[in-house]
Image (cartoon, rainbow, N blue to C red; front, side, top):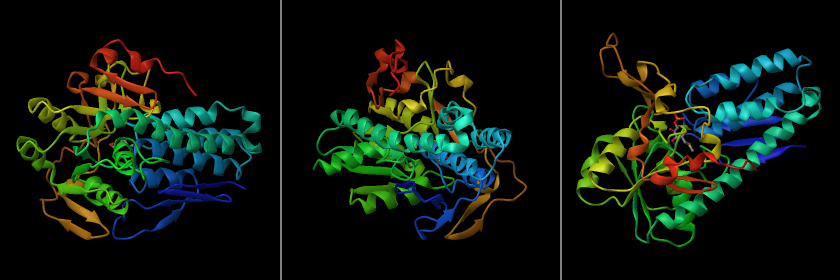
Length: 343
Ligand code: MRU
């Protein structure tokens, strides 16, 4: 019997459920995943989100499906559909790649479940290792700034950028996390604040546009952000608004760290120019929709520019924290973040 449990997903004897992140924080509702195409819908709607988490969920959905179909071709088709659910996070391709690399003849004999369970447990370990390498970058009393949600519901473990803050808090360090709300889908305001409050980590919420003012006041000691894809040259794609924070941090001479597992590094992607950026629906910017209600304030015929991610050039990144170590600008230039031994 397979049992998996994290803050955002649970598997109990082939029943696979995910916590609906669109309804948080006002409702904690679990959705039972029925099929790969249901999983694709859930991923596209950001009911589950965060680069590591969508990869793991896609893998589990595929393993679950293999038990229901006798067709290898159908499993391959489902894998393809899942891999293309969102284009920017490379973790989807990483996880599906690992699934498809198992012997085909064993797919319906538990090999896909085995691979999915391994990916789940691997991610927990990766988060712990990331935190270990991130902690030395913090001083006691540090005021951090972050964007989006890189925590427990974005991974199988304690998170990436946010995982460092959790670990610091757990170790008794005095840290404070400033969170930009992250328009349009408010992952910062809804999800990160919800998580930090649950863990009793001191935090402050600010609108995206207030980040410059907070830095100007001298409040921010370091910016920690996640990533959806890290290119060979260190350029990193992450939630829209990350690039603005990096520019602001450079102006204010504040260290800016990108934090991710090695599964987010794309050795086939030369630079940020090659990262496909997901464009999302106009309605997300015409107003807001969520468990808190639906409000539209803009003229519904207006054109919208709504990229889900942007790319921060490597030159603005002080360093990248991976599970296998900390890489400063010089190390990134030498491609040391790419020389990663797979576990
Ligand atoms: O659109 P989202 O909410 O999936 O975007 C998530 C992010 O940008 C995260 O920073 C990234 O996936 C890393 S999560 C550990």
